[in-house]
Structure formats: C-alpha cells, structure tokens
Image (cartoon, rainbow, N blue to C red; front, side, top):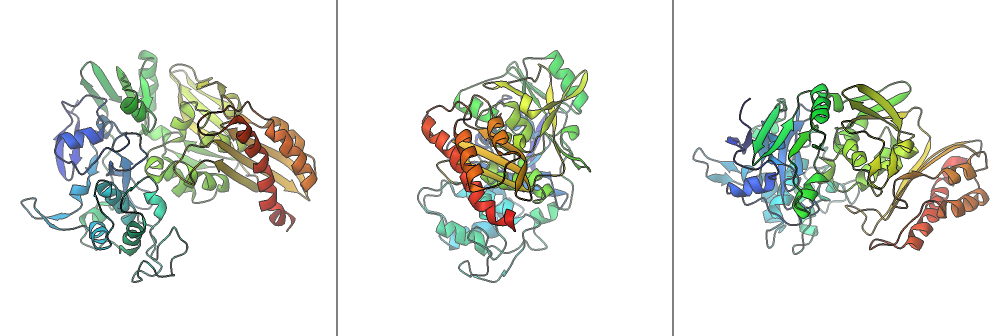
Length: 492
C-alpha cells in the first residue's frame, strides 16, 4: 500500500511520523504553517480553518473550509489542502508577491487587528469567494450599497453564513463584513478557480499505523462492515466533528479508527416518487445545496445547525450515530417520519427513527452496523417549522428543539408529526400532542389545549443551558408561535 501522503499548498508531504489521532491543525503547525491557529479546539472559533478540495455540487471540485482542529490528518491521505499561506501569489522561489483578493480586502478594510483569528476568516472567506454559484447583484457596489438582498448577503452574493463559525474578539465584525461584501469574482488566471474544473483526488484506501494505533479507510461498504465485524472496538468517523472534540478536550484515543466519509455507498441522494433517500456520509452542506430548498423543513434546519464550517463536515449519520438527545437533526427527521437504513456484513434492515433511540446515547444499532442512509416518505406535509431555542441565534447548542409537520385540509388537522429534542434522554415524538391535534380544527382553542399537552411532553431537566420549567414553557410556546405564523397562510 502506498505511504500516506497529503498535498499542502501544492507540495506533497508524507503524513508519517504523525500519530493517527494527530489533527490537521497540529500537523500543519509542526511543519511551520503557523497561520493555522488553535483557539477552542472544539470547532467553534474557526481560527484553524483551512481549505480542502472536495467533490463539488456545481463544478467537479469545491474548495471547502473545514475545522483543522477536528479532522485527523490521516483522513486526508491523498487529498489537497490550502492554508492561509497558500492563498497568496508566489514567485518561482516561493516568495509571496501579491495578496489574494480576500486578503487584500481584509487589509484595506481594516478587518484585522491582533490578527490571531484573521487566517481562519481568510480561509472561510476564500471558500465562499470560490463558491461557483455565488451570484453578484451589483459587483461594483461598495459594501454599504443597498443593492444586496438582505443583511446577510452582500451585493456580490457573499453569504455571511459562511463566516458563522469564525469568531473575532478585537476587530469587530463590521470591517470583516465590509471586506466580504467587497470581494469580486475570481479572474480567469486564478489557479484555485481553475482547479475547480478538475475532479478532486479520489479517496485513498488507507491503512496508516503509528504508535500501535491504526487509521483505516476502506474502499467499499462491504469492506467497511467486514472491518467492523472483525474489529468491533473500532471508532467510526465521518466528519469527525464529534470525535475530534473527544480527542482534543478529553484526550480520547482509539486503537483503531475507521473512516466512512468517502464511501460512495453512503454518499447518494435519491428523490423517488414516494420517498427521498439521503446517504449517511453526505455533509449537511452537500445535502442543503443538492436539495436546494425542496424540503422546507430541512431548509429551516440547516442555517441553525452549528456553523457553515461544521456543516461542511458534519453528516446525518454522525449526528444520529452519537445518539445525543440535543442533536438538531433528530427532531426534524422525526417530524419527517424518517427511517434509517442500517447495514452490516449480513445485509441491510430499515428501522423507523421513532424506534431507533433506546436510551441516553443508546440505540438499536447493533455492533458492526453502520447507518447507510436516511429515508423519509413523500409527499411532504405542507405546514412545517423548526424552532430552535438557544442562547445565540447561530452556532449554538439548543436548549429545546421542536420540529412540526402538519397536514391541514379544510381547516382540519388531518395529520400531525412533532419531533422534540432537549427534553428527554433521547429525541422523541410528541405523540400525545399529535393526538390532541389530529382530527381537530386548526383553531386557537385547539392549539391552546394542545400547547398545554405539549408542555408536559418529555422529562426535561435543569442544567446550565436552561431550567426544566423553561424548557416545558418553550414547548408550549412553540406551538402557539406556529399557529400565529401559519394561520393566515393556512386560511388562504
């Protein structure tokens, strides 16, 4: 097997002797690329962001920004990475001769003060700069021009959500926003822009061993499930947004890690006549852009799920596989009546998500089984909403998450599906509330009575995010909010 290698800023370098748990962040810094910084080591500050060449949605390759502090460097075997140092134009000797347009705008707009967070912002901004479907409304306009569609999109089509995972504590965000809204489009001779027209590197089958630990990337699903049968103690990772935190903050180590993020069998997205199937290893950003708003409930979820940096790596398979009671996707998928396709060496089985969770971080998934895909039926319910109650609008863990999917015909609730997170040891369906709504008129009286039922659903606890009483109150309030927001639309 070929020795594990990674291409950084156009130069190929061996991964050895880094340990299998070594993050991309530490690997880069050990090689003098100190623009990549460690701030939180949890994927929340963005100081570590770098660009990775990934399969594109609108072009063969997308330059995707990821948290280098979470990604094991072994998972990028055979892949291409660009750091903040690699964005500038250099001469034949490697000496920088010109700033990248994103770097230039950050400099002239005053977007950097102490500079610690700046390289991370630069990489996240560069990912958005190279997004193929970024459409300019008035490219020559100044950042203050009123031509942009809203406060979170610039006249150049720049989406500020691309920076939602980057924090700055001294400069403030106005000059950074101004820089983002001032960048133009890549020129024809831009090497990184040209790179998008070629396919990204194929995922390398990897068997990387150091210090009595091994990192494995099987080539097929059949190989993966056989590996898990042979090595039941192995840790399975996709985007590593959860496992990376365990490695950094809790010093967790694994004798064997199996990466499934590039398995083609886990990366499909099919829209059939009666259902949609989403591969468990597609990132949330890929799902969002491929569905393009066609599933409104998911479209509401995505902007509220962590940050763009996390969504660029996180997967449904990982979010469901951890069994967390405060994951944001389970309530939405419960409301969509999703089921999971579980695969092992003996074949596949389909399990309703409502029956999947059995206890705190526990599920019916057997040792050796992988989540291959998520399925939910069509047609979709026309009245949907996702309410995330948290201390921050974006990039926060929810105190309570509520997802609604209702069929209302002639003023009567024909079907109600409600998923809840943060109010029990597992994500749950609000079955009693669904029963209180179904067959009843969609009226203030019905909703007020059902809201009282919803307040009593689950077994909420008090912690540093919210009290049990607050969580219960927010459940009831969420249904009242849904009624207030949808009454006019439903009646019309």
